[in-house]
Length: 220
Image 1: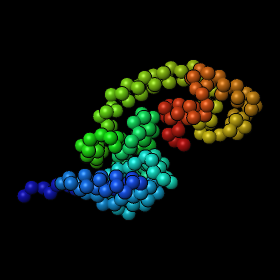
Image 2: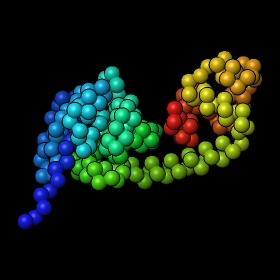
Image 3: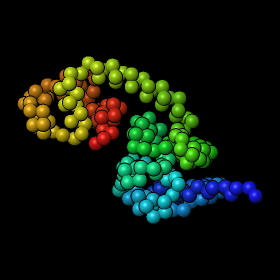
Image 4: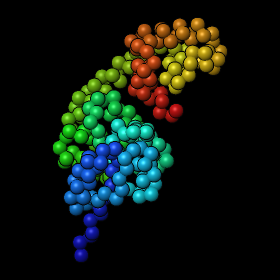
């Protein structure tokens, strides 16, 4: 007697009811998948994930309240083995890298063919990682290039300059950093300016993005 095929239990998290309906029809149309729960925002997705214990969570990024990135981080912290596939309109590789760092196993664009999402769900459920085929080559090349430039520039930073940037990225003010490092506020500002010049960074947002790229915020 042939072994019964395992059916993957899917949670859909998207704030648009029409989108969820279309996704449900797509998923339920596959012999090896079924939608067991739906959520309209990140907070609801967390609760439904606790209750339904799905095999895969398909998560949108842009949702009201808790967005998909925050929900992904929270769910992975709560359930480290949770399998999450991001389904989004955002093709910017910055979103991709942050979601993968947050623990997502897949990243698919809403504009892609339905087969991309189905492949991502199956691949993620099997323990793999799936990135939308339209992004793979560009993202890989761009990210490797940035990693090399970041590592080269980072080697030029002094220990103090790196320490200051790490604390800025973590959300501390110049005054708080000065107290932690036992420096004057003016010295902190000097280290910050020198580091930003070496790395060609402009503003706090750029510092945070650089910190994400370097993995400085992974344990914060």
